[in-house]
Figure (spheres, rainbow, N blue to C red):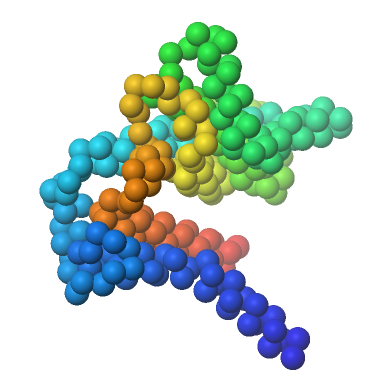
Length: 265
């Protein structure tokens, strides 16, 4: 009975998590503007999305472009900063290491809305113009700790003598970093990049408070504004379905590669 209830709990949890995604995917194949109303099978919403022929397409396409651009830049910069920060934290000793590790974990526990308001007040205090740059800086701020968290386990498992051996053999610190540390930390850096990209892609609160008044929209703020108008653009349904499929495929590829590496080791 215990095993039965454990399995039933897992299946119920999976259904609750994935049922809305399946629901949206199903109704992305009907032309109805109202979610939940089936008007026959159709791929018109996908055609509208991919050809840009839907009503108000310019703002939605601009929001998607902004989202991807901001997420890519923030994830890349966070990956580089987080990797260097992880190496620095790893080389600390005693209380300093514990204190810095604690400070790195605070932004991940801190609610997004507090982070967003804090960064907004900071930008206003500094007289910093809000727009693309402020949103990217804000995303880098809350994404970097996740990269540190992804890279740290790789550093702990790495042989510390490899880097010192490279220096003893005549490599400069820069050469040892790129040719010794980066290959060893690559999987952690890639995981950190993907996690940072996903966090940036999904963020609403921080973006909302730091985008300013220039009309900059990401996908999350666009959906929020669209919902306040009394409904959601139907083409959002195929867009959500495509995003979910891309993320699912990436996760499958990463897990297969990780399983292959574990077998080789």
